[in-house]
Amino acid sequence: MDKVGIARGLFYYYYGDIWKFFLDYLKVPYIVSPNTNKEIMMKGIKKSNDEMCLAFKTYLGHLCYLEDKCTYFLVPRIDNYGLDNQTCTNFIAAYDIVYNLFDKKVLNYNINLNKNETLKKGLVNIGMELGKSKKECLDAYKYALNKAREKKSREITINLNKLNSTKTKILLISHPYNIYDDLIGKDIIKYLEKNDVEVIFSDKFDEKITNKLGTSLAPELYFKYSKENVGAIMYAKDKIDGVIFLSAFPCGPDSLVNELVMRKIKIPYINIVLDDTASFTGTETRLESFIDMLRRVTND
Amino acid sequence: MKDGYLGVDIGSISTKGVIIDDKNNIIASSYIWTEGNPVKAVRQLINNLKKDLPSDYQIRGIGTTGSARKLIGLMLRANIVKNEITAHAVGTLTFYPNVRTILEIGGQDSKIILLRNGIITNYAMNTLCAAGTGSFLSSQAKRLGLDVNEFGKYALKSKNPVKIAARCTVFAESDLVHKAQVGYPKEDIIAGLCKSIVLNYLNNVGKGKKIESPIIFQGGVSKNEGVVKYFKEVLNEDIIVDPNSHLMGAIGIAVLARKNKVGHVYNLEMTNVKFDTKAIECHRCPNNCELLRIYRNNELVDSWGSKCGKY
Image 1: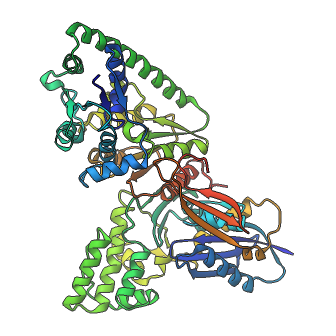
Image 2 (image 1 turned 135 degrees about the vertical axis):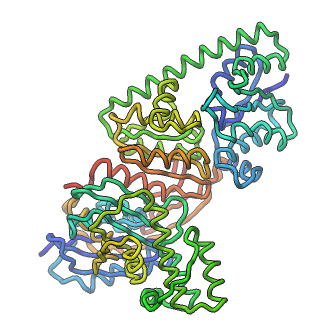
Image 3 (image 1 turned 120 degrees about the vertical axis):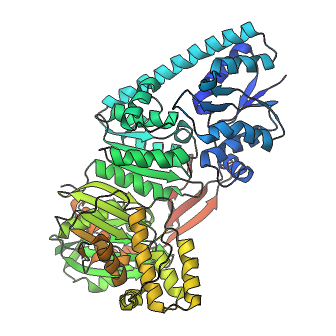
């Protein structure tokens, strides 16, 4: 039977849950690539153009892993969520890049709210492409949406509860595909937690609230995900001790937005840029000194 | 017996060590090149320090900082191992309690630390790129057939520093080669280089930071009069360079070692024990981590570098 391949990168961290619940409901078999490891990353780097960001290279590596293990790739094209809610160009380009790089059938849908192309339409079309009836697909969509929302709201509650912790609290501002990736963000989270820091994740907030807050700090922003990251700072600013900006080299939106935000906020921050060449030693020095600063170690 | 505290700052280019007393006076100090072998450099350093140490002193605390701090911390059984930012801030505050800005340019890293009322309020370090740091200067000195120590003096002679690309050292280097081949005088090229270091630093780590005086410049590059001159010129502020500016990190970590002393007396002869490192690549999973195993007297004492944490 046909198998859908889902790469654990980029979109997965936004839509992975809803895809999995959707396919589960339709009883379509699927495979998700494993956590990123060096081999996957190396394959991705080989496959990609050197101008691409580390996260996108990794994403391509995951597709390389899946290539001989599935019938289809699931790769959406996410353009915008309405006016002034653009996504990164990689999210728009991913489908076309994958289509041209791999000799593989690609299940694709568009999200472009300006043109009324929604997630619902997209998933229903995919379900029908996989031979299911429209009714089944609609039911599956509703089921998946509810399940995914429930899961997300649980995660948000856990994240928000951390704001009341008595430990040193650091808000990690990054895209989820960086934060939760084994080779990109995991070492950082591990290091912080080992040093008794409460790590709050920028993507686990109510996006409706953070989106608005982001606009209030910087009305000129038009990247949806960046706005939500910025909004998370605004939301948590009175409760956190510091902010870590973590981006993958060379991230376009982050290099603009983080720079802008750093000039506006009054909270201690540090900017960490990761590439595949960076050894963790340098990052560790930066994290350690940042924690020291927050805890005022130099002060007698 | 009087108490002394040893601070060792092992950077990528140079290794610095000081022994201070209870009042933060420097009793002995040493500054040598690391030359890619921190273990060997530290042995040499300790020997130098021992010669200078009056016999009525005993070592009651050891601290390590710098990029090889973990390794050397293990080797010396240090009671504190701390990052360079904290060490530099503590060291500088010991002598200049009012400092508001610390500029530091070392071999691989450059940093800026902002302090208000003796507390670090903000800092930045170079991110991925090591452009405009000491290692670049010393490699260019070699290219021009000079000792890096004379670099500053040459720069001061120049009246017309050449313009050298200030963004990336790779571009800076090709610029420099080009200018040398076209026939510019050496001192003008060197002065241009020093200026490009300053501009690069201010555009890179100093970007968006409010640099207020008193400003203290330290790290190995602060010994370069040319760079100091252009910092003064560009910032239009007075720049303080302490005679011990190259030792500030070591002093800071020695102060921290004193504050965190555990009580026992260290024997400096211990550096003569056999201390080896072995690098192996693990093939148990696709990550292929490079593991570094550390042996003291052939006994495995630590292992670093695994992602899974099994080793």
